[in-house]
Image 1 (cartoon, rainbow, N blue to C red):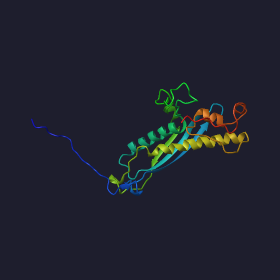
Image 2: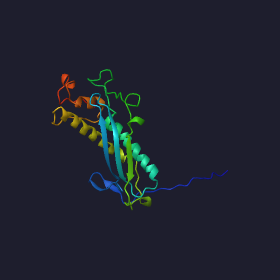
Image 3: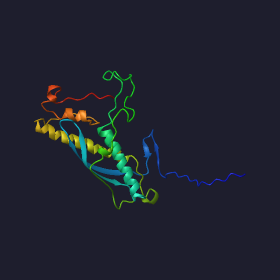
Image 4: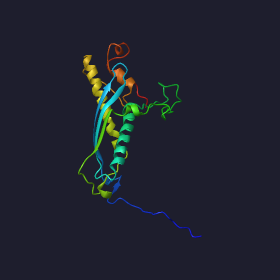
Length: 211
């Protein structure tokens, strides 16, 4: 019997792109996706725990073909970025983690490090798409969105640092201080200098990074 192909096939090559990596010239992308985010957090200065009270995001996706799907992608990427910015600390086998095989990544899955859960979703989470900005270089004047909103979650990291700044100011410490990414509860707590932390570390204490 003759085999009948019931599938439709199509191939598309994005026009007007190409980049010479040796010469450093060309256009590697057809268009760019833009966005902005604002976050408000509340920290517990005794435990270092935090919660995101508000997150507002605006994304430029041209004329969205399916806003519901695009907004879902934005929300998912932002929460993934929240984990990267404030939860998912990498622990490698080294002199400070001798219980891990040297050079071995211990935190390689959700069983060994904390990932965002439903309780980490901002209490007031608003996502909007910029209006009236068609993208003539793509299908139906739209723009693709996947993980570009991921880094917008850095707004949470900066909001946490602002909260720590306020906590340190109440103790009379107005100087610069380190707060590395991810801003885990342990790092937040030690950055919130008080009579308890002063017994164990200086006001400029910086936890060692396992990188």
